Image (tube, rainbow, N blue to C red):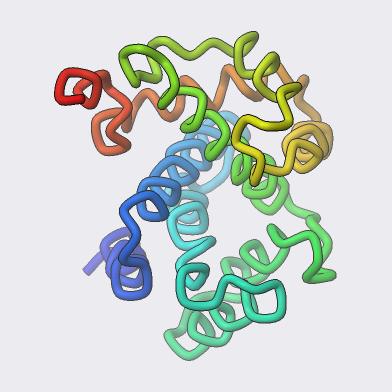
Length: 192
C-alpha cells in the first residue's frame, strides 16, 4: 500500500463525515499544488493535507485535537516531519510553523473550507463560478461561514509570503482539480 492509500485509510477509519472527508481532499489538493510551486515533495505534502484533521471528528476540542491524532500517528509510524506539520496547524498547540510545508498547511486549511462554502452558495454549486475577488468580499461578511477564522486565512497567506488574493486564486485552481470528488463540479446543482 502506498503512503497516499494508507493516509486515506487512516482518514476514513476515523472520519465518517462526508464534509470532513471532502475538506481533507480540498486541503490535500492545495498542499500538492503548493509543493509543486515551492519545490516540496508533492506526496509528502499531500499526505499531510489529507490527514491533518483525521482525528477532529472523534476529538474536536482544543484539548484533544490534534494531540490525540499525533499519538495515533506516532503509534502507526508516521514521521516526525508529518506529525510536527500537523501539530503546527493548530495555533494553540504552541508548535511554531517553520518549514514551507508547515506554513502551507496553515495557510490552506481554513481557506479551503471557506472556498468550499463560497462554491456551495453559487447557483451551479461549482468551483468554476468562484473567483478570488468574490471570496475576499465574502470574507467581510461575518455571518457567512462564521466558523471559519478569517484571521487565520489572512495570517496564513502572510506567513507563506503570498498576497492574499493570489493565495485565494491559487487554492481555487488547485481545488478545481478535484472538483468532482468535492461535489463542486456543478453536478450538485442539477439534482437539487
